Length: 475
Image 1 (cartoon, rainbow, N blue to C red):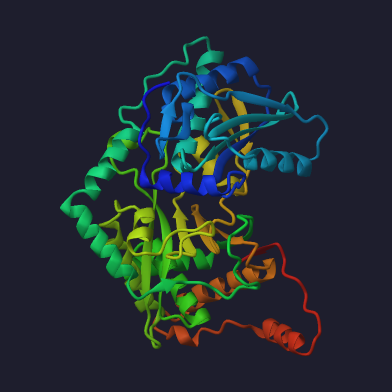
Image 2 (image 1 turned 180 degrees about the vertical axis):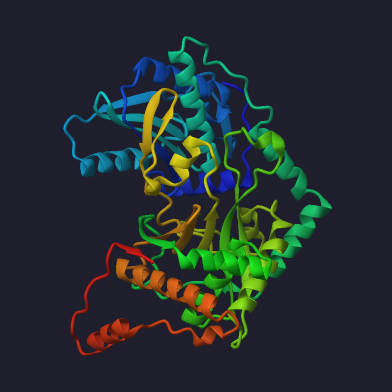
């Protein structure tokens, strides 16, 4: 064992939450691929070990020493590749087995924060899963790990050495930079900025189907919506004509919808944002995520165009204070985090960029595309993982490709029925259509309910059961 390493503020918060609910999978993450060719199992095991040799986070354990949470780097990875044979299983049974492997609790103190599992139905029919706990990884890190495992597999099966040089930077560098910033005058200015953002504003929240429990179970689900064609072109055209980003348009529309739906004028929503800014962090595995809090101040007569312009200003101002940890903000504004999430932020919006030319990255970022790729001599296809469900009331995650926007509404099942989130997704679509058709119209004029929903409301009022919502919808 080496000397203990200090944790970042995000890691400390995740350690606290892990101690509160060690069996919870709400902060598990991962990537998976369908493997449609025979796998050289010893080579794959050696490739996993080589990746752990390169990235010390894969060899890390998380413990408390002298009352302080620390990271201990072991000389060897605490876990390797596990093979689970599943002969004759149906697709549904395979999906269930992969999900079960993803949500298995992590014993961070002695097993670390990662697991690698090959779930095999036949010699050329398997799923390769890399699961991790967010205390040690993020989406970029997941891709880096899987990339290095497959590159090591290619080298080994080609008779080469899988040993590669470690990254030029380390996660310790990031922790030191964070500490240095917080002790500087710039860090003090960032703190003052975020206090001004939060002052007098409450987190946005939509009406729930059940009372909010004292503590969240961490169980969630998702509703999926595809935006395509004229809607996507219209959103991008509105961004260009307004000289703002697509994210600012989506943020403005979502804030406008929340204003119309909840009647809140001043509220906060969050945006998970990468802090992987320094060049020497680009190849480092670790948690490089911070949540920025955006404040909506919408007057009763505000228009969609005004909401989009205000959102753009929020984003630009917020990025200037990106380095101030969200977890520290919840304490300094005296709104501590609980097992059910932060009282600063109950709804988030996240936009994931279009996949690059990298075939592996395309498989991971756009699993619904159905594309396949030959990587490291293996025939690979996407395998979509449900994850990050139940962390908050509602997380709206948008994945963009050339022609579509895939929107996942991930929600807390303690609070919402599926039909409620389906209706909210429909309201989001109507808000987009209204913003595109009449961007200078008042948000208050947005008609949330169509003829079918009016009929449903009347049916509810007369005691007639209404039909349940569908599990998927295409816009």
